[in-house]
Length: 94
Image 1: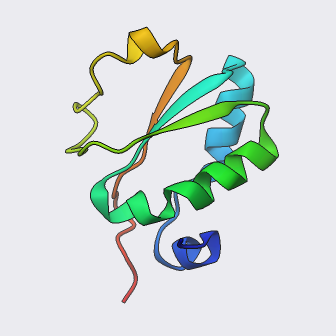
Image 2: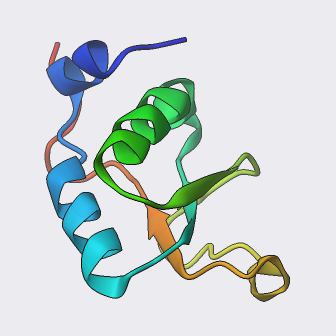
């Protein structure tokens, strides 16, 4: 499992903004969608979000090809909020 410390060295996922959004929307069940390159950090992200919110989380493990690639069938899961993470202008540091 990868750590948030490793993640923070490479990317800024703006997790504080995610926490604020979860709290402001009063979401209880949140689906998290990651591109393949960030999936190794998914459980570390969930750990952080669980410590800072009252929500429960589902990690979408299918492929994600961008913001238009919203998982089908999520309405059947009772999800209150979908958070899609992706690579942005702040690409990995080498």
